Length: 290
Picture (cartoon, rainbow, N blue to C red):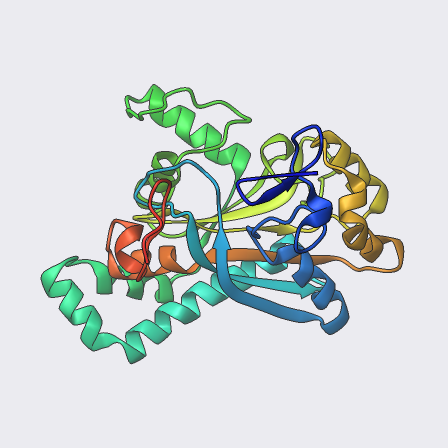
C-alpha cells in the first residue's frame, strides 16, 4: 500500500477503500427517497426535508449543486394519488403564503414582480391541469407547426422536455400549473413503475409558470422481477440495492412519492427569476463559497 496525497492506494495505484472511514466507496445523496420508501411501508405516510446534492454541470437560473428538497412517500397510493397530494401540497403552501406573508408579497409586488400575488391566488383558486406526456408532445408539435419558435425545435416523443417547453405548457397553453404524467421509461429512473404499454412509466412532473418543473414524482416499482430488470437496463449492480430489493422480497404495497425543490417553490411564489437569489449560500459548478 502507498499513500499519495494523503489517500491510501493499492499497489496498482487505485484508491484503497478498505482504508476509508466507511471501508467502502460512499457518495453524497441526491435524495432520501429510497430510504423513505422503507419508512413509508412501515408507517404509511412519511416525508423528508433536507439538503440534496447534484453533480450536474448546469449553469441555468433554475439549477443548484446543493438545494433543499421536500420528499413525501405514501403507502397504498398510486400515481393519481401522488399527483393529487402534490397539487394539494402546493396549493396549501400558496394559501399559507397569502395568509401569513402578505406584507412580504406586497413588497415583492411593488418592487419586483407585479403579478406575484395574482399568480399565487390563481393557484389557490383553481385545480391543476392534467396532461399526459404524449399529449404534451402533440401540443408542442402543433405549436411549432403554427409558427412557435423554441430554442430546441426538435420536439419528438421520447425527448426530455426543456424548461422552455414546460413553461410554454403551463404559461401559454393551460395558464396554470400542470401535472404531466406517463413519461417514456427510457428518460426516467429505474424505480418508477413500468406501465402496461412497456414504453412509459407511472411518473409525473408538476410544471408551473415562471419555473417549469417544480415537482417530480412517481408510483414506485413494487414488482421484484420488473425492478431487477430495470436495474439491469441501467447497468446498476443489484448487490448495492439489496436493502432496497428486500422491501419487495419480504412484503410491500403500492406506494408513491415525489420531490419538491424548496428553492423553486420560492422562485414560483415570489417571482424571483434566479434560483441563486433564494438560498443563503448558493453553490453551483465551480462555486462552493460559504
